[in-house]
Length: 302
Image (cartoon, rainbow, N blue to C red; front, side):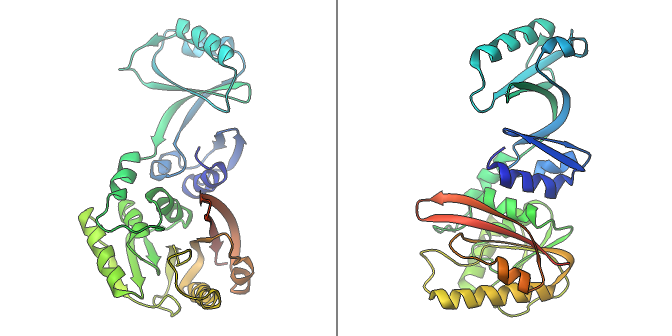
């Protein structure tokens, strides 16, 4: 799992499991929609657990004579000698072929987790989306844009009021959502439209001020407002913009609709979200470089 806390939040949003337990690098959960994790950005892969054990002899009857293609992960520098010893035991019990189903073998915290994969993140689409015609330093990466779409839990429709170059909208369109985006800068809207079209996607776009109420009865809002070095506005002006945007979002969202936005971790919007009537579900930090650590706010309208 990349960025464990953020990956756990994404897992909960997509799979909606009944219960989750976490060990280093692995989340174990019951119930939920495992296949939905094929849309994940930070959850690498998921599947059905066959066994959790310290001794392969305990599961030998389930595996003996079966054919698998082994995929091994040793997490947190697990004991290499023990890993090799257990793998040798496993190889003696099963047939090995790249043409057979994959068996994931995870070593973590002194235990082995064996499972059959059912969903994997689509790294090819993330890479393809990174190669859009218009780019700009400081904009969200494809994987970060996808994770905020997932955290917003849209059912059919997603709105991005700071569309910029369309990074969030691209991920929403890829997931098959009806996507709507606006930006106060008409040049940004043009570039977003070009980026979407180049990748074979379409979203409804318009020029609009995020500080104004542009839409009604919105299911989900996921966005990346301005911040960082590229912003020329004074700090007080920027704070006013954020507060207006938060209040407009509270007015536009349906009950249980989510607002997810990314900002510089130096800014604090927990109190503003609470004042606007939101339940703040999580705040996740993502380190970018020495000058920028981002915070992802996930809030829900009661």
